[in-house]
Length: 139
Image (cartoon, rainbow, N blue to C red; front, side, top):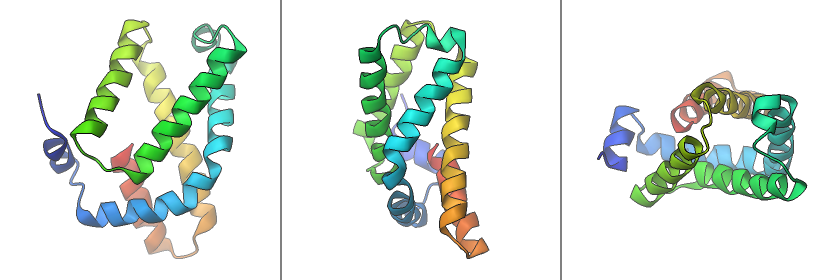
């Protein structure tokens, strides 16, 4: 089983990316609640993914889960404990029988949300490009 160090190397995730994450966190974390609400509205629009959320309580708990994951994504540290949490999330998706393309669609939704917020927050095009490259690596 690979370590987080190996995965970071595969993505060319450097100390510069760690610094970029700090700036991304400043930009994006204030939008955590909006992201959680928009994300679950997105999931609830599709009958297949909506079927996994049978109660308001289930939606509420998952909103807390996505906000926690989002914070971890942006603040790290990207270590083996973080990797273990990601594996658990993946195992849950497999156990409940979630089709893989729904995970990809969900990450795409989050990526698009984050891109919009980052682009709106910055003027400098080179800075935007650097931060968005780090965001893509992180996601």
